[in-house]
Image (cartoon, rainbow, N blue to C red; front, top):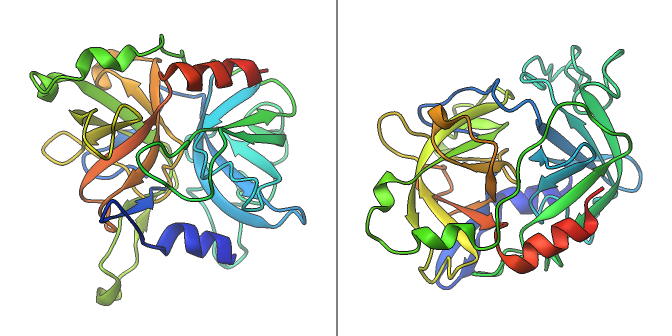
Length: 290
């Protein structure tokens, strides 16, 4: 495992006197996500083609994948990527051989899947991501441009300032979102010696709006709560994954933010996502879409 990956996952950054860390899968009351076939498991590689880290991403055009800036961290060594769109992209991962023999994750595309369910990418961009999560404006959004178009559908982008209508505290408990991603579903206390639980599948869960205007958000981030009956949150493996406007029953394709960071190392607190409805962010996205 690379030093960069270890740093990204396990480092504790004290910002505004609060420890934050990037979040990387869906916890709590999750369900398998077959509703968003354009949400993929994205693996990043260095200049030598060596595995760096994995995240989640969302097609916003046939060739443009939206993810987090700390995933598309080119200064940190990300040069190329591969995206798997199978719902169970890494579910059959075999530690003994280091790959999933069904999909090829994380090393290659399985025979017959390249160009249909598995895609390479040679162009990685980020929104001037500064190399760590400097709150509140983390610049935590990135794009991965596939080497060839995918015919899997894609998410809708919001109107500028779409989320501002929910900026007051009144009624926020009724504003629902759906998060989707791949990765850990239960993170153990380090001292108990038990393994973390990871299905490496695309899972989704319903979350509730908490705040848009706190010192940690300040109009840049979306804070949601995934604890409680019928709800779920994000954890290691979901970084860059979509936050859709609307609950599980909405069948929404409107992505308003990308999963960014959390305050609890065990993924049991509130979640924060970087808002893509900010006018300057949307302008950057549209300028770089293919």
